Image (cartoon, rainbow, N blue to C red; front, side):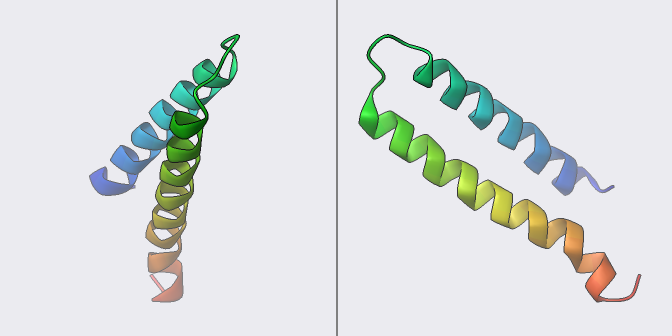
Length: 59
């Protein structure tokens, strides 16, 4: 696994942690939750492309 893919995984974990922390609050900030969900989706998409790239190229 290259360092870029590893860093994407670390960032995704941090966003997931922040999202679950915000959701666990008595009064979660709706705007922050929406931004974190969007960030999670973008990171997940990029991670999928990063992991699928070598397979698609036949490596």
